Amino acid sequence: MDIIHYLEALDSSKSSWRIRVRVTRIWASRSNDGNTFLGMNLILLDAQNYHVCAFVVPYVWEVFQNIFTEGNCYDINSFTTTQATGKLRPVSSNMMINFNQNTTVYHMDNQPNIVPFHKFELKDIAEVYDIARSYVPDEIPTYAIDVAGVVKDIEPVSVIQTIIGDRYMLHFSLSDGR
Figure (cartoon, rainbow, N blue to C red):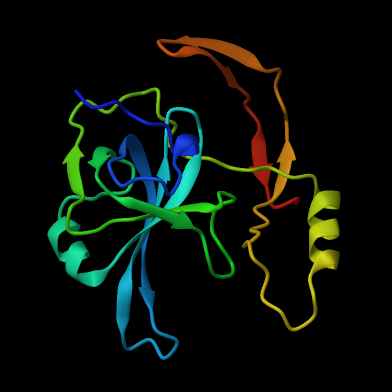
């Protein structure tokens, strides 16, 4: 049986990777005029709470379009990885996965609870201001920043025992500040 790799371990040295991930988001890429379908983007999240963006070109997407559903887990094999390019990237990882004609995808019927459903990178508002001030005028930034709201009612961190070790959980409320 092949080794299952964590997303953080991926590099561009080979194409025989095997990962088990949850698909947290799926959306189409289109040309600037909106008329040409360029492919599909997926955000993949693994058991180590590491996320990457994946891109699927149109002719490969035809094979997978009825397999992928947001929120489900998949065993994905044989793909390439490259340094992420472009602006307004949706995740902080600098690695990107590219599916190709050799990629295989298997839906995992038993959804492992060890893979989180979502990942958020919370920042203090002062950090967001610093990042925004560092932007060069008239230049699109490398990463997208979504301001979701104000964190309130933070509870103490709790420790959850899982089959891969201790996980830390934090409960809080997120509001628009009103």
